[in-house]
Image 1 (cartoon, rainbow, N blue to C red):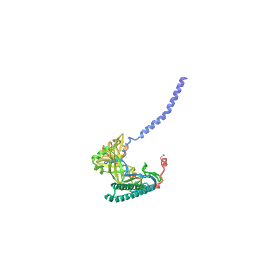
Image 2: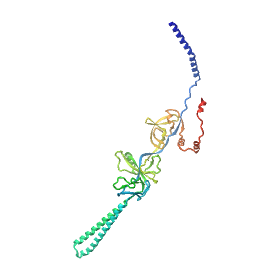
Image 3: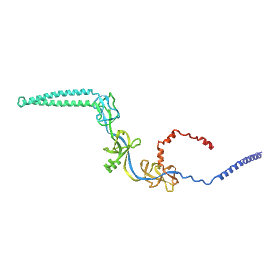
Image 4: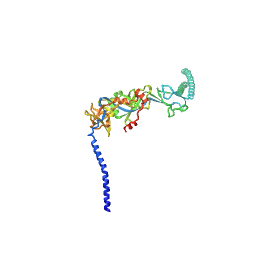
Length: 420
């Protein structure tokens, strides 16, 4: 029975093997057919197209930049010089005010009363002085005739001098009262832009208060304060004080626009800040129309020198890899050579290259990410004009019309169905 079981198993396994043999033959046959249908060696992929630009060589100015803070030429803090209640504000905040223009008024009644009292005291003292002078005029002839004693003459002289001094003192009180009455009208000491009112109508103000009434700033011209390092200050000092004064600076505003009027260096602070190692320098800019205001920030850019025959490439042509700057150069055989370069200043959208390039060489501007050292490429001129056109937000009238009434586009789904 054991031998019979073993023989049955063998017969079953042989039947299984014979059953898979046709399937294996079919698979092998299909493989041979597939191998026979394969083509010969495939062609190499075409060289990638890149946009190149010849290295630019020209004289470029070397700029220095600092962050600046704008401030008025004169910033007059307006305070009350007499104590009283504010009864009127005669200016609109933010307007241009003139020298002597009344900005605030303080209740003048108390000061008018003090002035009237001082004038009364002055008249009384003047009357006493007049009497003293008359007495002295009568006694002098009598003293010459020895009709009165020497003591009477001295007393008359002393009385007249005392009365004259009292008149002078009373006159000073009148002047003081007149000034106090004038101070009830708070005026602007300079022409400039008025600030926000810090005191309101009805507030008690006076010289003892810590808060000013407002501020008036003269802003044409306007100052821009920058912090210059000690090394830069020493270099400009060696170059000559007159040369530093003649340098013209550009003001780049917070929105990136360049202020149309150029400025000059005005003055430097008396000392270097020991905490930062910088010295404060003021640049003076014309400000017609009072467009610039104190407190604004901007960048002050000055062309300090000229770099002769500098080599320039677009900034997009320079790639930074592990802290090094690399440029892809296309040789005469249209093969790529990756060069490590040493960049310097930026001039608009270009970058000055000090080392690593030669005049006349072509660098990859568009497509630097897809090239490798020694790779053949198909160079094309850099389409800078096309790039600028694409960057413009305004389209042609025809394009705008098309955008307003777009033509119906065919759906992609039927195309997929046709392929299927």
